[in-house]
Length: 366
Ligand SMILES: [Zn+2]
Image 1 (tube, protein in one colour):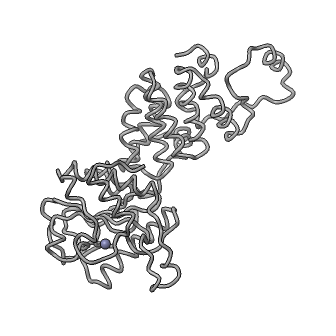
Image 2 (cartoon, protein in one colour):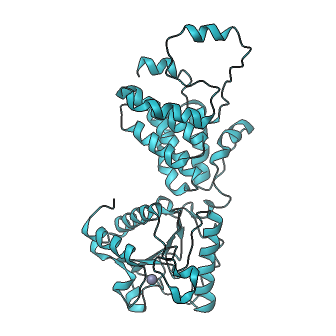
């Protein structure tokens, strides 16, 4: 650890995000001359607001030497967590992990990434990092990490009021995680059926058999909100259309991805889907639907005339989900399709068609 940073961050600990900053008041005369006599300190004044402290670090981080920079990224990650910016917090903790860190610093970075995913309501992605965070952690951080991991797995550990207060900002939405604990799907599910209040599967279903291919769709319904509550409503609405109007056993797709990139559990993978066109094309075919209207449909009114773009987080989740499913079921890359390859349809729009072609060709998105 670099000595500069050791001086600058004497309190760099696991619980920085939850501890109240020490504010130096103007009448604290004993402290003022001491500060003035010291060499320029590489730490922002504690009286600065969180966004200003973030700016302070961001302005200096590229001038630091390598060791200082790794340490500073840990500190910055904690500040982004304080500021409820999960994406930036993950970026910083990942940057820190690229350097040489002690075991407890690696644990802090992993715990930070886990909390950042929890801030973004993605417990399914938090678990691996929380598990890594427990390994090598000590003290309050280890206790918090263990508690949050248990929550992600649908359990509740006994906790003191102090512990609950510290983990409170990271607790996921009620019921979001309980239902898929133990389902083996933790790696790639963010929102369980119970969470979006799915109605039960009906009797008229057929078993899927071993999945051998994957097909990507769009919902063809405009959706721009990134709120979890709006996405839940939309998935439930699609299920109602499929069950009540089309008389299907369940929502037609096995997975759905909302504009914030959250992966929703659709019909169970053990059950054959209703998405590709007919029984033959649905056989062994996992259906993934991205929520949004990615092909303009002016004949359905002005709202539908707007051609939306899949969001970058939505595409990132599609990539991760497709990779996980292929690894789980040993599906070759050339068995990933879009709807238009099975029948005459505009689904899922030209952008997703291009994404599928690139995926099969092994071309990484920009
Ligand atoms: Zn489709």
